[in-house]
Length: 464
Image 1 (cartoon, rainbow, N blue to C red):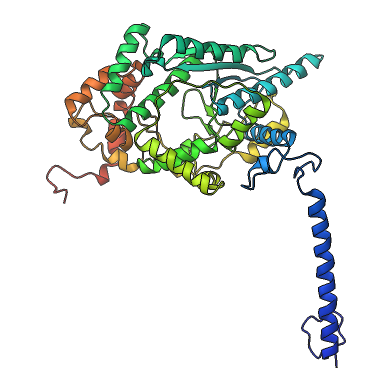
Image 2 (cartoon, rainbow, N blue to C red):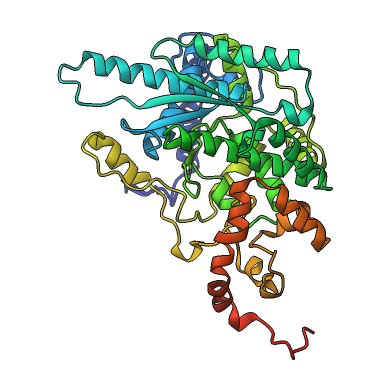
């Protein structure tokens, strides 16, 4: 006898005939659902996943956005990521002056284009407003000329700079100031002397990875200098998922795990001019494709290929990405779970010129850093926050007056092992780094020793 309860699902007391009828009805239902699903798939196959009206950009089956979206939706998706990063992290406010670091590559080219579009829209809204009470943020563009490092022919350098000028000039109004920044401008002296000192500084670093990293730090120093001198309060970089993924692996290999969270966030305010990364969620492949689809001109720079750890990591990540297109995003998401530092956010805005929605959005999405990870000591070369182990390495600081607070990566890859060579390298450093090494960090020596006093050995104790 069958169970009379209509809600019973235990099949208790069902007769064989009733069970067969139930199975048949279930099969008919599944078949009907499968037919509907198949019909929907056939009707939408080969169409954009978002608008379901246009053909996707490509027919690749690698799971990329180009295989799922049409040109308009693909571009809208990228710009949506950019705009969400900007608004959620309060990267650009109406009263800000933003300096875009333009290297000529696809990532910085897309960043420049998206900032330009936001700037143009803000200007149109300003012109349409009667009282014109809401200001429009300023935009400038900086290009770091590294031809003195790579000894490029003058005609090729002039062509690259000419192409950069043409790209910026061809942007629709409002116009943007372009700054061509020679890498040797990190020195306060004349360009000829600065070029010679820079060459000697790089030659003094024996490690290939150390030279590449030092040049990267000098590039940031040059951008910070031009931004500060010209009144900008934001420095916007075009770093994307692909580049950050390589940095995550290389920094881990170099022993920079403690400072890694500072480098992978949307905002990095440890610098005098805060650095923002609005393309942090975009792949290099997607940005390159957008440049091709929209006809955005890029510039091929004259640079030597990366060697050492940086080159190996780049090849390794490229190989991983070829095997699985989601590898870079996986690396980025994993690194994004690290606890940020207290300087990885823009201070909350209390300005009537900023829209209330922007202030609410910033308060909602602002990072909640762990105060125990706050760091007041930074490497004088790369400006990385120092860990406790880095501070412990300074136990002989009073005996070596030329020593300075330095992270382990810079200590082993950039600084020479011979103390006399270290003194010579200090004399070749740009004035800002030299002053930081000789004054800023040494002023904190006594405070640092007090913090780590319990971990230090006395002169009579055996280290073993």
